[in-house]
Length: 379
Image (cartoon, rainbow, N blue to C red; front, top):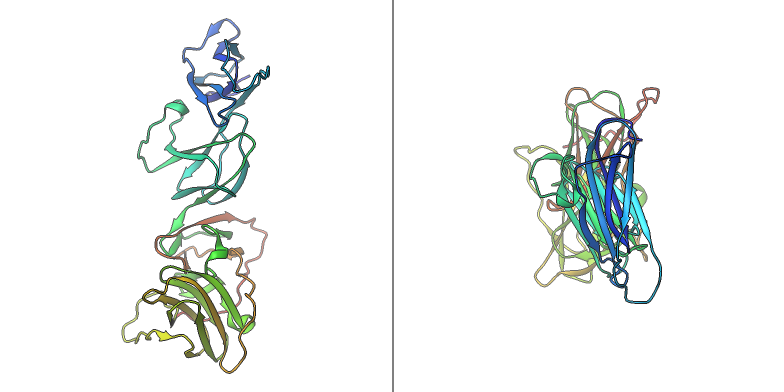
């Protein structure tokens, strides 16, 4: 039973599948013929695929599958599998989604056109493919071409061995900053990291109110509680993270394993004339910090790319013997939005790294309270 007018997509797969048709009230065949294909995600047991896309009026329909001679399999199994699905599930434009490949060997998803990157991640090297296309509800899925239209939904197709696990990572922000437009009420902000964060330095995030230029939430290395601090990570290019100090501290920063210099500078959201930029210093240098937020930059030297162990400690104290707890992906559970200037989320990720930012409005009964009560001025 079709409840309302719209475009509907049906997919069927089977060893002996030959045709797939729609009938109105059992006697009137709907015009579009199915698109035919073959799934070889499991090469030993291929399946015939039929996809039928039609714009339908409300009413009663018969979806009928017709058998045929069947596809040859590598073994002598007498199995006659048949699978049917209807519709395309929708995913958000930010997040990680762990899925199991369907018996068809092809899975399709709709992602908002605001997504900037989609990654297919496997736990171990195996055969898999990812296809991305802009979606047009009036075009059969299997016949879609890249339309190049911004803002239109994106159709994601994953080809994977039936029953095998895979993960989709979807990002909608990048370039070091994400703008959050003016709004009213309270919102929850959640960040999805790219790649495997265990191989990298901790990623820092600072949320600024654009009107007052004050930090209203952050996920950074808090020197008050983190010292002594240690992290072992891949140093392939210039790498950054964010720090916070609530009091004066003489901070020693040391790198071991590869040659690198360290640069520590105040976090500055807007360019200011007259400020003198600090100079990068060798490993072991002691930085004198006053309260505020800082950007720590690690600069690999010639032939200095590899695995770096970075140590931070108060001057004169012992270094940490093991890696410190890692900063989790930021989850700002209650942010009061500024109706005038909005907010900006700054990240220590590189300019070429995308990340996911999900924003959900909260019920009005939740009180306005920032999860980060530190009101440090941004210089």
